[in-house]
Image 1 (cartoon, rainbow, N blue to C red):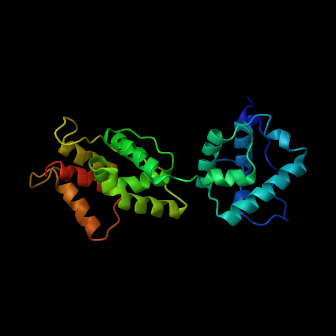
Image 2: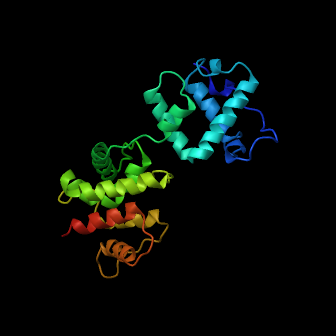
Image 3: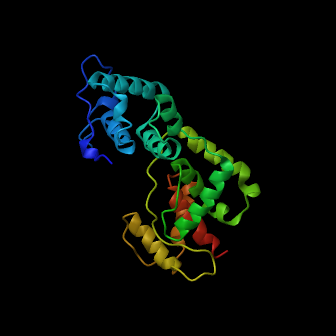
Amino acid sequence: MSNLSDSRSLPPAPSTRPRSKWFEPVENLGISMIDHLYNRLDGAYPHKWRSNFADQQAIDNWAESWVETFEEEGITPNDVKIGLRECRRRFAWPPSVAEFVQACRPQVDPLRAYYEAVAGVQARFAGEHGTWSHPAIYWAAMPMAVELREQTFSAVKARWETALAEQLGRGEWEEIPAPMLQLTAPGKSTTSQERAAEAIQRALGQVVHKPADGNPLGWARRVLDRFEAGDKVTPTMLSMAREALSSTA
């Protein structure tokens, strides 16, 4: 298999090219995003990919065509990341631009996404990352973490489909964060509520203080109060607060 370091890199964009972020060098890559995509496809399809290009002009034509399509279709770098993963699953041979765009935005079935979300939420509460085929599934799941663990699909179907559709419609998503701590279902021996509160405060960069009123769940109540007041609260924090309070109900 070809080493990525041996992959061809496109030359600097000539002045006739339309200005596009895809042709601009990226500091952590050392090359442009379209150069990097060429190299990734070359690594994914050794020999097969490069055999499509007779000369440098052919590579330039490819870059111009794909960037133009990305701009028209609103493809983002995160979409490309998804597309590369989907290509590994779908195509034994290098994709056309139309196939690649479809791979960048795979159709997400709500029912299959629901089961993935349930498994993913269980993994998160066990302190694991979970398997997420699409970041939108994660971001739709976290505000509903308690419901996904405790209720059936029929009970959450309408809300889940709405949340998933809203997330898919965003087009761009933050990276899925590492799990913050381990929390478990009520009645099972695990991390204490005081340790959970301290872990969350440490994650927020706050100084940990023992609650003056002796209530280790005060942090959870404050998170919900902030959320209800309209303050910005991350889905992970909100789900943890709800889980902590529900365990004492």
